[in-house]
Length: 52
Image (tube, rainbow, N blue to C red; front, side, top):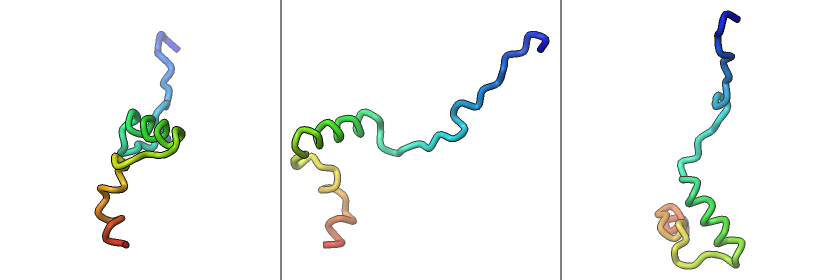
């Protein structure tokens, strides 16, 4: 191998989520504690209100 470092393709199949990890974790924690209140991001999603 003449001192070459093996190449790893670690992130090739990774799909990025537009929501930050800390937000997903806090939402999951809130949902497991009985739901979330008025800070629910779907309350601020215009598509939810327009569909109703």
